[in-house]
Image (cartoon, rainbow, N blue to C red; front, side, top):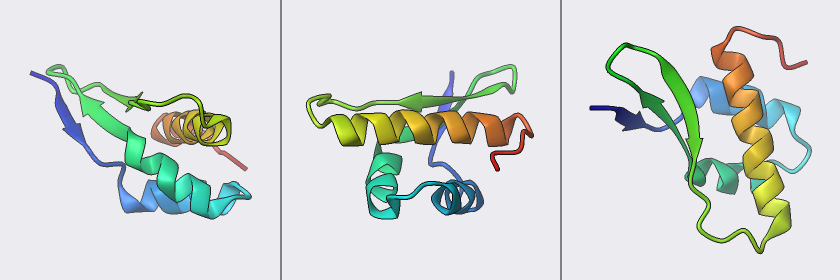
Length: 77
């Protein structure tokens, strides 16, 4: 069964250094989880219940993108 966990602090820190609106990004991370499947693969999942706040929605998507890139070992600079 897949296991969900919070995004590690070191990944959050790297993403927060990259984005301009840090307070919005901190809120966005409340809607983002890492999911580890039985085979050990990890993917990033977002659960944003309300997409009417477009700024938050786009920040969630940006944070998911940056988190995925960091997990793949890519540079986000």
